[in-house]
Image (cartoon, rainbow, N blue to C red):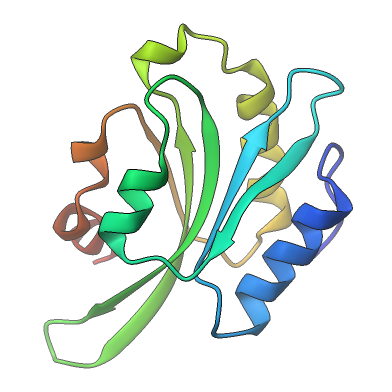
Length: 133
């Protein structure tokens, strides 16, 4: 993984922890307007419901979440999901998050699922599982 511009050292550490350790499945990043740095807001092991509760209704966030699910054949899978959280109540001030989203897609080269969501129902667990195929 290369180091994207605007990603704080704490954010890099949190993303490495998510990738390398089982005690973390979620990193939520705050999109600071200047100097367009992504800063860690939350690092944790969240259930899907806790993840949805952690998303603010008035502000954009970038979320990297390890989605755990069972395939139709019954095997367990984990897929990393990158989410640009941009609710309408945030007032369209998403430029720092959009830039960060692009940088994170390049940084997280093994992440295949990238989503933009503005409503929590767009992040419904069954919908995310279905999108993972």
